[in-house]
Image (cartoon, rainbow, N blue to C red; front, side, top):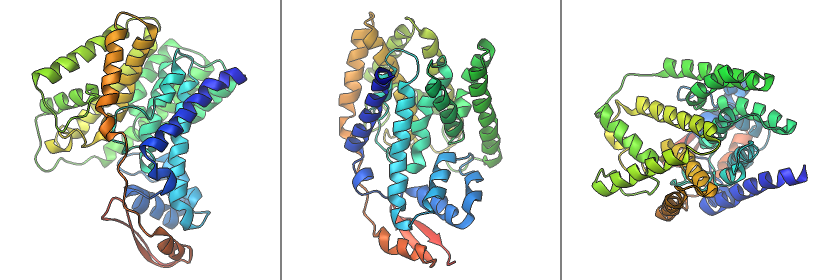
Length: 384
């Protein structure tokens, strides 16, 4: 039991260290960010427990809502710490769950959850825990059940929470369908029922919240090309360039991924990649009629490509560690991805606001208008 816990503890510890290096402000100067304030914080204070069931952006946000509700039991002074440190705890839970899956190198995959090339916007922010939870959810539905009873219980709870936190269970639905057909154990049926039910709920909410496109749109084919490029391009650049060198790099990466997926235990890798492809298709549906400048710069909308980058890094690492023919180019691509994203390794610091003064007013039931990050966002609460 102790030896089995060592890889999980390593993955969890590595995640904390990576977040400490990439988003130190989360630990030392926690701040509310964007919808953390006017949505989660404000609605938890005004609506109470009912806020947990309120959809935002077309889907439920179970974990942030529960954290926001729990935070109301304490002084508002502690809210930024509770939110940010809960986001760290969610990342640790996700990496530990990944490490507990019964596949080779799962502990390394868990340890790399916060190391994937990314500009850091999803790290240490309660609003963005959905992106951190999704890779673990994908791996749960794509792999066989763990032997440990504790790991199975954890997967059930994790699947329930993560499937109702953000829309990513919809991307896992095809894999869930395959699992439900091929495997007939009670545990498999439980996981499939949880994720399938959540997918129906989140999809219905998304369809109900959908609106007609506005503004300048771009060709759906161009959007598909941008998404494919950014899914596979692990080396950030200033803008999307479909020049010869970049296309050769993308083509080479695709070949390495294909070769690497043909080895042992190829089933879970194929299922995982299918979830990633489904996710990319959902991103295409979202952006196909929106202005093109939302995704063109590499830094723009980087959260939409965090999960594909995690999955691609996992595939490359698996190929590298198994020592097959493709391991040399896989290792080179991993090294290039890490070195190429070094300039964005450290998440930029945010302005520090005087939160305590206004938080004490919230505790006393006074009406407040509190500035939060990013600049321009505010929280408005009426007096009680």
